[in-house]
Length: 483
Image (cartoon, rainbow, N blue to C red; front, side, top):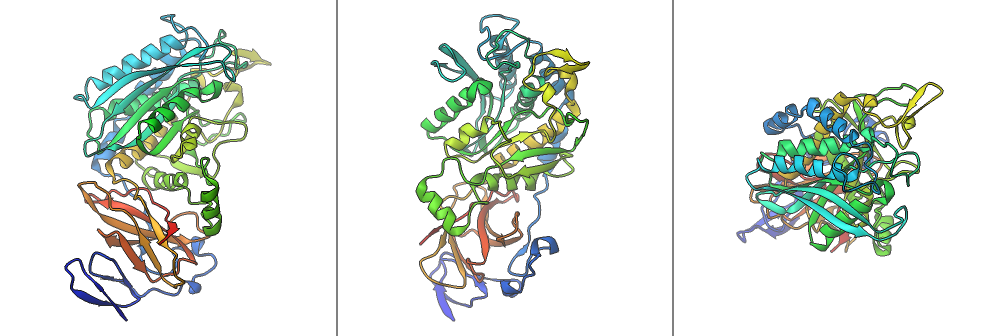
């Protein structure tokens, strides 16, 4: 038996069957923890393992989010995809001064549309043409102006915390250097641009706690140039990017063999961080954190808030950075050390990607609007809307999360920094078996910054997430070893 003090300084007795905090009265467990050794080997399949806490459950959409998702407009999405395809080509090296054809015409149209949405925001949304000159480099033979169209919706109470959603508006033909031939780019990636534009339209008139950046980026097909510049600019400005999603090839659910999966979208999320340092690699290897990168926590959050009847979709998380031989704009953000993932359709028809518009043996090639499924794109937009809205309305991911490893103990002490959100209600500790992919149990611990739990840190994985007064939950922070 031991003692600790409350915030008021009164000593209170505690046992190992309690949460111990440095700042508040110990909260007794509702049930006595069962030794984890008693858990069956197939705990993940059999249900939550025995031990403290309640089973983890998804976060259902609240009334405001449900209303937003119902307003996603399929016809607007289709009109955007068809308008972008009608520019003929949007190749990064195509004409920038032609008013009807080429990437310049597409850029100006996107800017005008987003500016119109911003006009209804009461000054909270601003739109800019973010341009720079890319000197000759891979797939850029001469100095080329590259321009991102960026709409920023400033948050009310936590404007420094930022989430980014992108689609790339450039396109390509079979030859990646062919800036003249038709390259309508309907699926790749007018579909992604249509999603971010529709979400910008819907959210411009709504108030968010955190800041959201909606960016139509250029130069993706030539080597992620536009997103690389955007990420570097945000990094240089000290922006706290806590999540980023690239929407790239989300226009169809039909594969080249006719296979269809119209109710699923893939989310690629890396394990070992792209920007990991040697010291961080040593820590990861020592604790077994290969499946607990910030990007994997973001992917788990996506499953919690967007895999439901309100979106009509199943999110299939893929434990990879991207597909073989391919890459997208989330990689630019991973390189800066931020959590990011890529949404893409479940099945692909490669005759309708990166192909000249032509007929071969009676088969139409080319990335044309006729091969898009606009109902499917609408559902992917709802997935994005559920994720971005939930992130922007919830508290931020806890910072400074550590798991105390200075002593050999059979319990676990966790510490973290308190967030500054005015509606912050407290924190939850989550845990799971080391062989489980998803968090299995949740322990509410209150508005504290330290807790001790009677469960061995050597046997399970722990995480910490914040909760606000309306029940919105943040992504999980995976603690680092510390004191």
